[in-house]
Image (cartoon, rainbow, N blue to C red):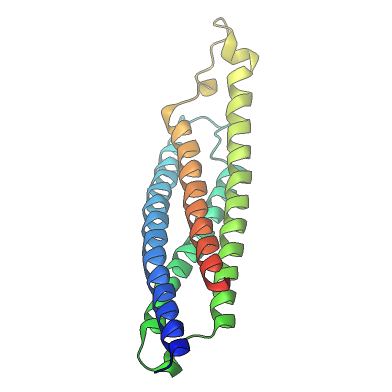
Length: 189
């Protein structure tokens, strides 16, 4: 075995290990944050539909729709993180025909970047809509004066959980972005 092939083999093993480790870390961070966010959004949807709940709920309309779109996109990011693990396994294979090409690997990483950027954008837009509704509710004259007390204008803990769910989803997409960028840097140097 020549020095060049040994160097190439050790570089391939190092990249394979990076793909496996980064893929698993990214997978689990995104999965945990995504599941927590999904549970919060589902709980919010169930409790906001009960009789007597506020009709100007931040969960009604565009905000939650975009948040759910961000969660669906996060599912794609989770899948791609698992795909990174599979690429790492293929790179460790003793059969060279199993190794993915550099171009194929870079395309998967670019797709991961796009999916997480789109997901982050959708989630941030959803968060803006939800927070905007909460701010409008908090500064409305009915919320300030005690003479015209309207319980529908009070911001509840459940409202804040929806904001937390969006923050978790943005964080999950960020973890996916960091993993993809780091792996892309490893592959292209």
